[in-house]
Amino acid sequence: MNIHTFECVAWEQDGPDFVKPIPGTWTLLPYESARKSRCKGVLACPRCNTPWLIHDRLGTIKTPPISGNAMLVMDPFRCSCKLICTAHIKDWNLRKLYCVAYEILRSKEPIGETEYLHAETRERALFLFNQGHITDPIVRIVDCGEVIGYFATDKKEKRLVV
Image 1 (spheres, helix red, strand yellow):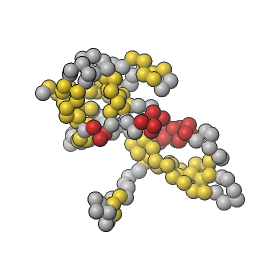
Image 2: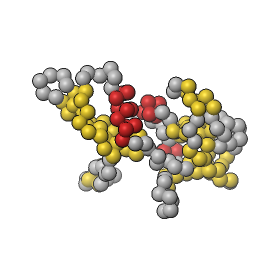
Image 3: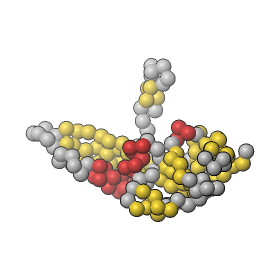
Image 4: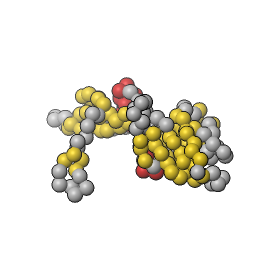
């Protein structure tokens, strides 16, 4: 089976829709679309240019020791044009995880909340947060920062893992 490496390239967009997918590349989904679909990007088949949504559960994430940028390996990738290959999706970790701490000002006492989202920069995370809360009650941002760890339970749900 052959290997195809998909480079991350910004595709031309008209609103939330991609106008011209570039064959053999992938692009990040806009934050709003990624949030709704639970997919992170879309790739274009190198043979027929058919766009396919990609999700990190469709492959294995590998981090090369030299560049440090993660790569998603989809083995096999199958397109409707009969192309079958091992797809290496480069630069899978371009968006970092940010946490926005904010307060909802509904009554005398503000209600503290947090929201996690992926963005390329802190400024972009704040912009995306604001776009997602335009219709919400009055919100005051406390701070925004890159997540450096997280808590989860192990498979037996007995201990915390960082």
